[in-house]
Image (cartoon, rainbow, N blue to C red; front, side, top):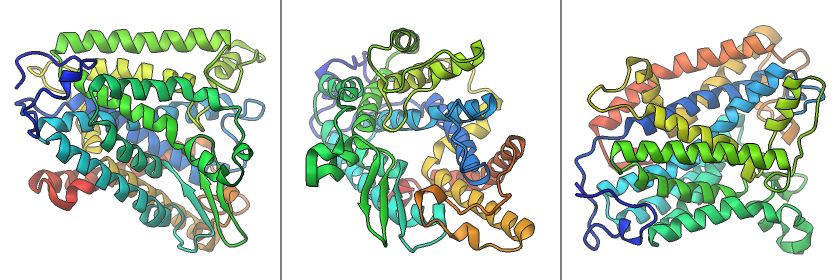
Length: 416
């Protein structure tokens, strides 16, 4: 165990262990990280339940048509992706407790490539329950996988450089918002992969759409790697840092959003009533995630991480124990909850609509992840009830799998 706290801005923080050797630590697994991850995984299921059972034609962020409840249902799930990418980098840094930098780099790029392959094979099948490949969405696992591949290389740099790379990508990528893909001619699909959502393949037989451009997500993952070193500090010091940085991000979001000078392509506007104006203020751009979107989500996330960082002598409150289960098996839970939602859609289709072919059909992006028959959309309370059912069904399965991983550490289970 280190005799002094590691400074996340100091190059020697990464080089604290002897060459090629992992940093040994007697620290227990940091439960606050797993709990925060578990919270956002549960919220993620709400968003995806709404995708399947809500009205696919109704945009939840279009304030001209969306109700306040629908907007907030979507808005609360905005925290999921930024926190998940951030904690992926954090987990990588904490793995230096028991892996050498070389072993960590090797694990990151192999697991990253595995996620990329998983996205376009098994996850695509779970989302759509077909393998016709008429429509393929390059979604969160795609971006997460490539972020890990990049982190495999970047993590070998001094920690100050890793932090600078992450901060630079997050803060500066909005400067490229006005660059149209057509500017690059035949290389336009590459620009979409890196910065702007859009189709990279569009033929009569296949449509491939990039939902998660890579550049900002790579930046968030790199910043998460720096955060992992902060979490090795003594408790009082790291809690002070999380409070200061989290608060600073919240204040920066409010000021920059109010001024409208930089950080998001969607200006806020006054709406009828104060509540609707507040919703407009919060309605920042996720695809790609703007600086203000990331400030709005990561600031409160850091404050939540501080709140969850309880004294080890007291232990984690019992309330959070079920959430901890989800946080420790995130990829398994991710695949499982999509399967459960789709199976519920299949059951509902068979019982209420007398057929199931709709849930196997997703030929175009406006009919992803399923084709909704007339009369399909459920009211928001029923969406919430379906979400709760999915989480309840997933819990015992995830708990069993978490136990299996605890008994058989390493090997192929570390990739799931």
